[in-house]
Length: 287
Image (cartoon, rainbow, N blue to C red):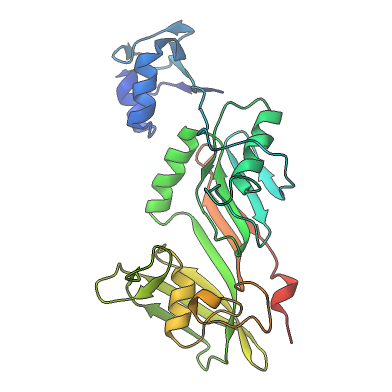
């Protein structure tokens, strides 16, 4: 893929690309492969000063997937795609990234196949990763440069998500804020817990519907700690239905009842605000 800009002022190519958020890793590649950079259709070194109105073009380098990442034809529910980003609606029970125990059948395997079908020389760059049993919307950058730009937005809280969750018990509050630090549980590489020496974690919740033994909630995150919603709700005495890792029971639903229902972000190139919705899954409406 080739990106192009019209220089707004006299400036070195390197300084201009820095202003565009180009990463050190990409700069290194552009130095090693100078043919990827052209100014007015002529190969140009990064130190060259371009003039106002000059046309700068950068060919994005090919990317290599890790040796453990194999392309595999899978059914992906893609709700939006362009040359830079992709949004999909993940089904529950599907892992996102391959592991030693599960080298295939993951979202990443399916994305690699999808890219190969389009002759795209990229690997997988997932911005909003979900747990295996969590369903709903995920944001994926299709190439390394888009990932760099979106990751910067993510750090600044510009990628916004809301979740639907089915919690055990009946919450009395209509809405509220949970501000409790979260850290890794001692002796576990997976489980997290609320602990005084943990990282700051803030969750906002709003009650949507009350069932006989459960409450349907909408939750938003001000921080992005691992298992944040699951840990916070369990600490309050209202673990997510089906979330056996944090004390939930599987009598009503056979997976942790968490769903990424809304995703909102600024497109890294068009600068348009894009918003996507995914309805509450049928297995949440249990009573």
